[in-house]
Image 1: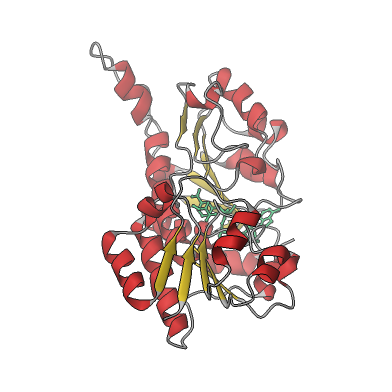
Image 2: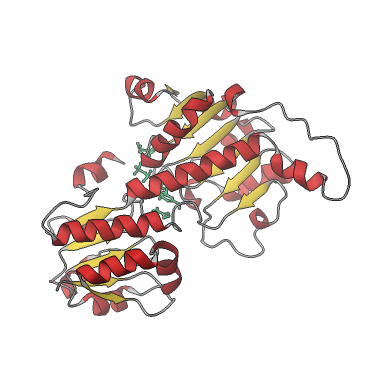
Length: 327
Ligand SMILES: NC(=O)C1=CN([C@@H]2O[C@H](COP(=O)(O)OP(=O)(O)OC[C@H]3O[C@@H](n4cnc5c(N)ncnc54)[C@H](O)[C@@H]3O)[C@@H](O)[C@H]2O)C=CC1
Ligand SMILES: O=C(O)C(=O)CO
């Protein structure tokens, strides 16, 4: 039987593998589970995977770097039980025969669904209304915004961004898309209008959701100028990577009572206990809940590994074309 090494710490294993998918994997292969709840170092991962043909990792495990690959010559598949392919797979993999599969299709759906919920909660001011009614009846906080009457902005026509677009379109908002890598025609086919600058998107939207990878071109792309350009009562959602925004600049606007933010990610992660994003009344911080904690992911990982062991293809095989397309 092929040997499969599961790198994730125990708490993450519990979050993504149901008992049924664990059993399914164990029926198909000889499985070694990381027995600890700490993130392996590269050296520990290399030792753990030494005799394995398949590694199951995620964004909370070491990347498949050259030292790991060289120490583990039997590895043939690296199953990335996560979505973020860009930034995770390093140039060390070029020329290697190892196959990389990603659970992006499963993850994209869970993130998009959470963003949709947050956007509605944010636009409708559900949280401040509920809070102001906890001790006595108060008239609702004025609520002129709902999806059908809003302009929604998406930064990054990524897997997640596209799933979100599919979910939000039936509600009828106007959708603007900022992504320099897609054409106006491609944006129109998705049902959105491409804007040429991020500032245009910030100025026009009632709600903005961010879905870019963490790269040199996206680092802190939402900065002071962009947050200041947003409408006072706009909703800002970031479930991409904490480093894609200037968190201090966002906090400065939130402290003025402007904007309502939902942050699933921070830089570093998790956010310090003293970080105002945890306590500001107009900010909800969910500490990487959007995509990372769902049985769908473990199920897709198991199906991918089983397919691979049976000589078939995992659902999403990552190619250099995909990675090189993104600066
Ligand atoms: N919070 C969570 O649990 C999860 C977070 N993520 C994060 O969500 C983000 C999106 O993930 P995927 O959908 O897999 O991404 P993807 O790799 O499918 O797409 C990235 C998109 O960003 C666009 N892009 C690149 N540079 C840009 C720029 N400078 N300006 C605007 N657009 C730019 C690209 O054209 C591409 O369409 C990633 O940062 C990923 O790490 C993904 C899954 C779960
Ligand atoms: O796949 C990713 O990028 C994640 O953040 C996991 O939820």
